[in-house]
Image 1: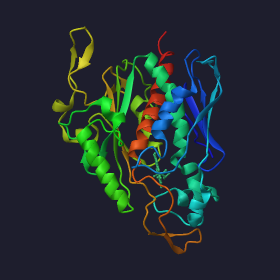
Image 2 (image 1 turned 90 degrees about the horizontal axis):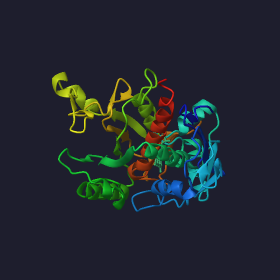
Image 3 (image 1 turned 90 degrees about the vertical axis):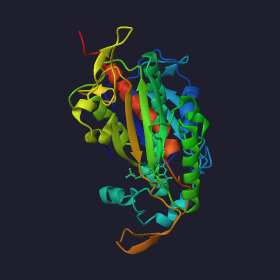
Image 4 (image 1 turned 180 degrees about the vertical axis):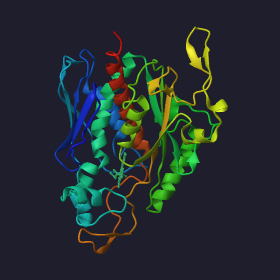
Length: 359
Ligand SMILES: Cc1cc2nc3c(=O)[nH]c(=O)nc-3n(C[C@H](O)[C@H](O)[C@H](O)COP(=O)(O)O)c2cc1C
């Protein structure tokens, strides 16, 4: 199975399956001299962890990270960093009922068709458990961004039809204070109430995450195939259940005239070049322009329902798939640190690559 490597200069390779021995990541290209402890990584893993609140899956994985290599005396050494997370709470018998059945809109059918063998336990490699390895790598990438003074955050901007209105005030400091991770307290409550209601019905729901990077220097991005937004889109669309990516004005921008959509340049009081609007989302020509990079990521409703669904088995016979096991009713709160991690990996990669761009 190929396709497990992401990035050029800051390169991550993830491994592992949901119910295997462990999952993990090898990070190649991380500069030497960064302060790094497992506690630095654990903070973000705890934000992604199952069982963290009443509105996520009640699986009880500890998700404790071990640093196996690449760090000496609390500093990165410039050699490959290997991180491992043991799978401690795998209940494979929770999945025996779907051993030969295909869950609608999950990866069961496609993996079976492609490989002719399927690790059905917890979804195997198709499980979002793999994203714990990305979050661990992202915690290290974030350190490279911090050194450049870049500020990165993400939050849930919509759950189903409950979305942040343009007039809603966003308060970054409350994101980690509510279960859904939304920057507006009132909308957060509505989103949580909606997820609780949906869960009671044995159903699931999707939504949107907004991600912002501030104090990004102008000049990051590699035209033409490695445009900054192309790499961001690939990073986001590689996350399980992600179905859409929008930069700046996104699809709504198609409704505007160029005269309203163009971001006019001006020089601010400190002599910095800025734009008075940011419909470009901080990227023009595939290169950051110094304005905040702003994008949104759409996640579908979770495929596994606590309801019976019609499907087929591996022999093509019509079967009923029964809702069973410990699943997320909505991926959004747990996906926030994943979106941040993948964004951090893209920016760390482009920061390191940009060092070679000018003589
Ligand atoms: C944080 C997170 C948690 C998820 N939890 C579940 C889950 O509990 N049950 C499930 O069926 N899918 C879950 N998913 C989605 C599946 O991993 C995903 O739908 C599946 O791999 C098929 O891929 P696709 O939806 O991108 O086509 C989760 C995704 C994320 C990002």
